[in-house]
Image 1: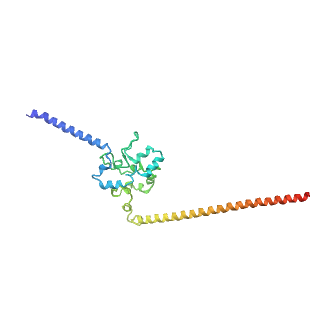
Image 2: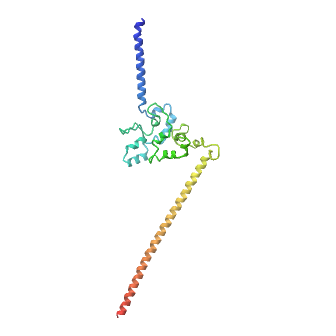
Image 3: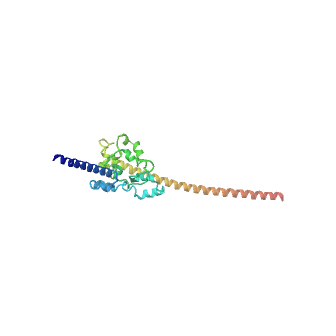
Length: 247
């Protein structure tokens, strides 16, 4: 009886192993396919809503980008940062915009890469406003403060820097206190107002300079006219003198 049931047991084990392998292969295949941000909504609705209102979500559809992209004749290199899953060989992409999988890995891998280099892969050079370069040259990089430490406060996914973000580190003394935030904003507003005053003064000086140039040009023309007039008088007087001598 046991000998008869043994093949069935072995067969059952083989079926279980085969199903397990098939399931693993399907999971692996799923991880290699881009699922889109909608796949994250079930568990991460709040994060999805924050991302959906961010510039990352509109990286491709943004009107300003589309206009600038058209000006450079739709260069395919731009899509490396404005789409998700861009393949340079085929010049195709999986999704429009910078979606969850561009930063967290393809499929359900859910990688957590907090390195500045990940941000620097796009936010660099002329079109990235040299933000990565500025970060490397600043004090934050020397203090091991990464981009997401400030741009993803308490895992926010809109990547906007909030006042309390700075206050998490800048505490205790006067220089490193939360009061630095409104003080900095006040100085920024004062500087903006001062810059506006200087621009007004420059504009006024330019107007005065233009008026002086007009007056100088007018005086120069009068001088030329006067010089020509004097020359004509001298010629007339000279001719009259010569006639009198001849007569």
